[in-house]
Length: 369
Image (tube, rainbow, N blue to C red; front, side):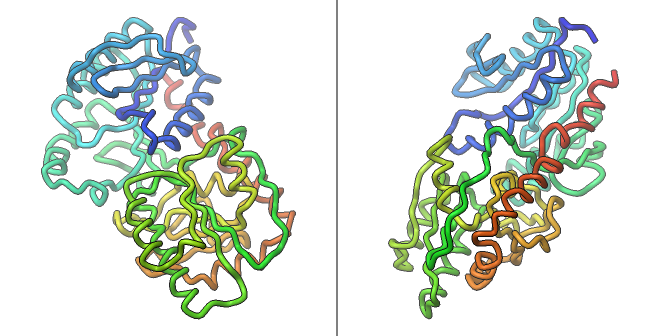
């Protein structure tokens, strides 16, 4: 391996917008692993008419790019300048003529490419039929230039490209084990997310609404940490159901501020709206973060990382049905003040969800050139 060579991580979105905090954390965690195996790892992204090249989270190049085509030209220029021989790229949807031309140029330069599909199948998430038509026209050309793709769903190929099925990993150094609360009559629920339609948190609000029509001995406090396009919908439901005293919109939190919410929660709420995108199986990063912190959680889809029978999880239906709060109460009573789960969940995360473990087949592929 030539130590003047570089790896380039290509991101086809703005990683600094508020809703992409989780995405940025994931990318940084992946880059930390790649740095252990390649002489140098750079990262590039496009935002507001500018193309950026970063090393160690520091901008080392930036150029005006008034179109995606100009952006791709700068990416190729930097690949040559910094002797990039390996590229890991988050895919761009839709596939376009310009995108295919970019892939062709990278192949001409001589880089080895792995293309990540963060969501697949993605048709259910794209609302524009025009965008999908363009994508269908060009996506089958991708395999001419890319030999390996990664996905977070089961399947041997994506658009004819051989795949490695990844799970979402977790950055253990960013997710300390929580401090466990004492048993009480209030149950703290926690959702940490970007509040997109596939999160489906309205199912919890609807479940709480039904519960309070004939309340039991427990009270609920739902901490909703994050921002996103679905927040307005959630706020409206809280108003409609009269849940003001039971739901708190906390905004985006990181670091010690985020740790506080984990310390004051008993149950984590993972995505519950996979059915909206036609997704049956998923590996969202949030379940891995909850597990690494020792927070029992509820989820609503098939997850390769869990059987659904672990005593610290509850798997609910992948449907629009309101969450049965009795299920959450049952999980709470099974896990409250059980400090053994902190160690058990953390150990499970270290063995199954570290990015070093998950990216190993990708690294082996890239190194084999």
